[in-house]
Image 1 (cartoon, rainbow, N blue to C red):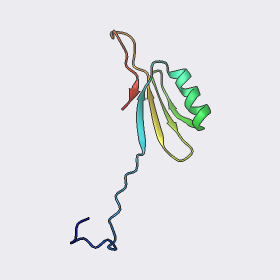
Image 2 (tube, rainbow, N blue to C red):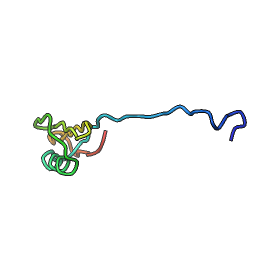
Image 3 (spheres, helix red, strand yellow):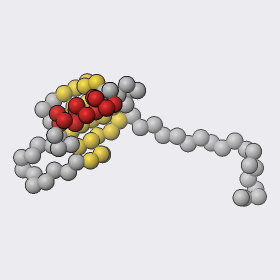
Image 4 (cartoon, helix red, strand yellow):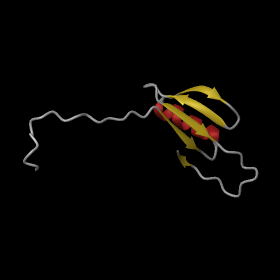
Length: 79
């Protein structure tokens, strides 16, 4: 421990708040069902290849299922 630092001095709080995430999925409908069933999300916006879900705590989950045309492989994951 550094001798110059007073251990009783208040330390600044560092925090982060994540408000949303984008998740690329292979199939949109099964993914929608999963997030709605497991996390009690509501579908706020639904398009052919994407959906915006809102969790009970206000967290936004953007699900995106890229078109399979013109792509050899589609990767799924969180962005």
